[in-house]
Image (cartoon, rainbow, N blue to C red):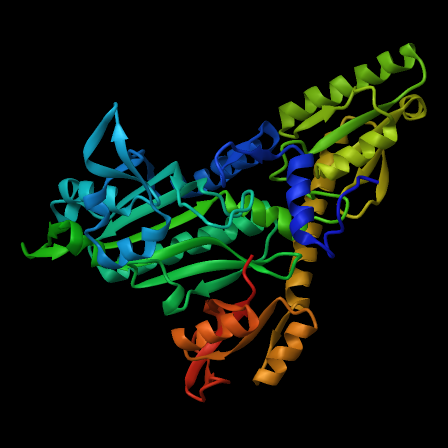
Length: 475
């Protein structure tokens, strides 16, 4: 086989090895950094393409701000600077000289953007202002994992300013629903959509919304957040406007982000002991052709067919390539399964003579034989769509099977012992109690679902009123 560790027995080792061996990424020379290889970076380019189109469709303009931020900017919003202080990387020297003021390498861009917003926004006619940037950020993590948590990572960050709280609230949920739609449609990932508890919200926000997903390791991963910043940053950076009554008001602001952590989530949600399983809409290579031949003449004929399939595939938007390496067919099967390619076409001299193609699905290993005809690419696209849907259904079934509501601490312990990923119970949003649970059971509050946000019950620990809250071990 491929020599990977068992995913169920050692998810962490499996995860690291499958990324390296599938050629997605490598370790950078500085601890905690990551090098994207072409196969992995294409996944991020697909995020930029498809999510970018969704963002632009909602009237958000792409911009780019500098990565260096004067340290004094970060200090203007007290809660924000306290939240990020442990992770901030600071530049003190440049050009061979000590800087008069240290520069922060952006951990996020609220401070530098909002200083500029104060100049851009004068009147209610300038609102809403909606911008987005695709950028790198630096957060000096102590514990790092490829894609999921690195000291430097890539993301998009959206920032908006509004005349009213209602308009800002609407934007928070527009961004959250957009992320959820992208996860489901392109990454085939179901998520729990809702609010962060007060102790877990973004530093400086009034409230934070989030998407939480469950990995095959039964640990939770946050993918995509959207924050209602209220007027906190507007007051710190003097972002004001003259309203319709000629009165000065502070703007209401939001921010929202989606990062390369999502790729780690996609790997962890869909992978198996054979390696990656990439959703067809995200895969760099959707179909690989494996030629099987005995003679040079046979190889030439198969190559002619393969080239025509690939060329036609380009014209209809199917990403295909052929493996003409000197490795054995069996080695190639294992290698492309490891790399997560959704469909494999096997073309031998018999298939050539009968004008048929054997197609093997990565998602379940099943195979079908298709008659080579003018509509072959339509049939292949249908198989890709079926694989996409199967991955989502399987991930949704896993999520449902590993989520349990509990009504006492004893039931909580039992659920964790039985391998539940999400344990759900009424919780009073008490930071002290959350810390106790993290210390005792290694679980943290992940999300208060939108679907049940109005359900109230007794906190199973304190007896006070609380909301249904999803807890899990964090990856």
